[in-house]
Length: 422
Image (tube, rainbow, N blue to C red):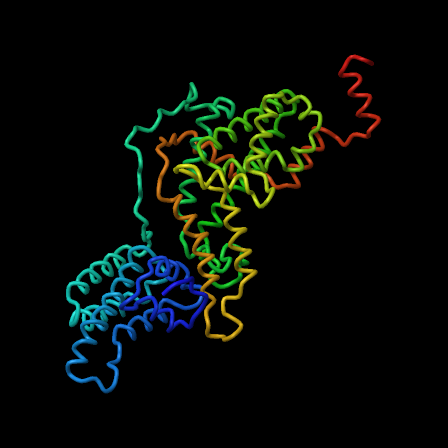
């Protein structure tokens, strides 16, 4: 069988999933990754049980039946049990718990009578899921280095310190640790049907809790960096804070911590900070050059082309900018129907394939964790400030107090005075 699968009914896709003479692991992974978009766990189990209990074709002689049983039925049943194992091991979600008792009964009776070894393996997996219902079905972690993590760069006094007492590299490291924890918790099901964008009153609003948590983290980082800069009444201190956060963003970039890097960058593009012309005029050339380099990498030109090329070429660990994946998933969802126009039962599997490619890219960066040491005191400091971040309106009002709006003639006079001409 050649070519990509454009669509099919649920029954037809399950047949393809378990064919005796055809195995396509990409199709199997795509199906299990996305099936919740077009059917429930119970409906999928119904189809797999039907497939396991495949009907004998009519009119077979005794010899033909034995051949059919050996060459087709047994292989189909093995395929079904392998799909079930894959589902439980790699693609299990808490919502699948509704089928565990029924699957256990089916395993202990029907499967055990025909494939006892497969039944024993399945039974162990089911019991494991029943005992740990909230544990992620995990992609196996791949730690590619045995080297020790670097020693943290600590403030002189860990009991009492200010923001500028934290080394910019260590700040980037601790924010990366916090961000990776949020990113690593994201599950494939959260990426389906734009679950993260549902209103609070909609059904299954909690299905994308980890994506929502990651979005909230980024928004809070942006607000925190903005507030930290605006908290300085003295213009030179504001410049120092801008320099500090640009260096943190640059450190994040070199750690492949692009999600936090983008959150910090968004603070500089925030209107409350961006409008501080007098402050930006006093920021050093080196800081401007560093910020320009980050902006060039993370810029939205040609659909974030430069950033995408870099991310696909680097070695993990890495925290990609989640917003790009959510944008890609939104375009796929909005631009492609779940069912083909030719039939209300024909699932648009080409759409599911596109979604799966994005989700698999998200997952691949969850495989390799960072080798960094948490510093509880610094992380507590960061969390306290993220929690206390102010809203946009308050920040803009503070910006206006620091640098009131200036007429053009006032600006010219000021610049001449600062240059010593007046």
